[in-house]
Structures are given as structure tokens and as C-alpha cells.
Length: 255
Image (tube, rainbow, N blue to C red; front, side, top):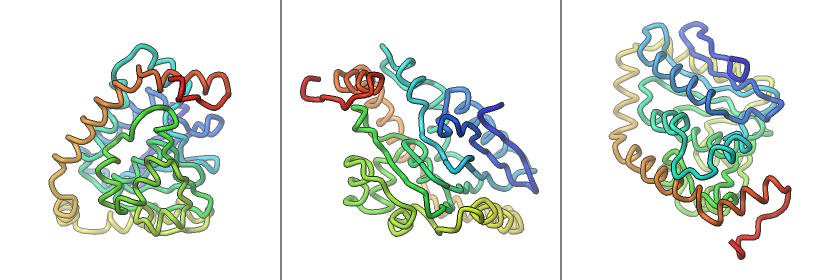
């Protein structure tokens, strides 16, 4: 599909966001395609690892806000396409690597918490403006972020909405290494190739042992999704969506 390029190269499945004119914002059809690719790759002996890559100097601006607002009107739940993707993230059976260049917003950041390796360019910027839309964190980030980086930094990222630079994200334990932009994708693919050269059964067992029981993450994703869905029809969210469409700052006091 035009918005997403999915290919398998040397037993590595590459999922590339190809909507640079929309800052690689994710549409419902893209979520479905990504979930299908991950499920198929996990089941295929021809795939050893999954690699997420952006394009045009941007990783992803997260949900396509225009589509999101249109679909959210009157809804009390996340779309099945979005839920299908984020619910599968903790269940992925093979290593996941991300190459983050430029903006990584919303789910573009929270999905990184499910990756095994994350490489970023110096221009990478991680942001989760959920509260600016009257919403709450998703994709299990309210559980995973405090565990990964400590409560204070997680609160700063998820609630205050502070942008994390590539170096700050590395210090927080989200990013493994910061590499030049022109070496970013090659670095991620090299790491995937190193994994592909290892004993596959030992790789699978080691990853499962390190990740541990995922039931708490799955439960948190469902809890977040329920609250997120309820928030979609809240006065605060309606005010935030209206402000976005009218290109003004939201006034939550009147909400």
C-alpha cells in the first residue's frame, strides 16, 4: 500500500512508514496492515526479526489526527484497527527493532517501549501529547514507561508532555544508541542481521525469558483502552478536538 511499505530482506521484515507528506501519521488501514504483517512474520520461518522505519526524516506523528477526530465523534472506544495493533505489540514473538529519525509522536513513541532495540538519529524527538487532547496514555505505556525510566521521567514524558531528545531518550533507557541519520537504517538492519545469525530457538527462548509474563501488560493495555474510549466523548476531548480543527489553544476550563 502507498502509505506503508512492507518487505522481507535477508529474513528481516521491514515495515516502513511512507506518508512523509502527512508526517507518517498512521491511518486505520495502516494499523491493519502492520498487525497482519507482524502476525504473518511471527509465523513464517523466513522472518527472524521485524524492523520499523520511517521516511522523509520522520518516524511517525502517531495517529492521523484528522481521521482520529472524524472516527472519534460519538464513539466510546478505540477503533478495532488501532486496538488490534497495540494489543499485539506485547505478544510479538520475534525481536522488534526501530530506527527513529525525527518526530515520534503518540503511538510513534509508545510502540518503542515494546521494541527490543531502538536506534535514533540526533534529530529524533519523542512526544506523547495525550493530555493535550483530553486523553490518557495508551499501548501499555502507563505501566511500561515507569518501569523503564522511573516514575519521575515517565510522568514528564506521558503527563507533562515534555519532548525527549534522542540523547534524553537514550539516558532514559528507551533508545539503545544515537547514530548519524545517514547510518540509522543500516545500523538497525545490521543489528537485525546479527540476530538472524544466532541460533533461532535459543534466540526465541532468551527473548521470552527476558520479557517475562506479558499478562500484566495486556491487562494494562485493555484498562487504558477502556478509559481512552470513555475519554473520547468527554467534554475535555471535544474541546481539544474543536481547538485543533479551529487552530487555537484548547480552553479546558470551559470544558
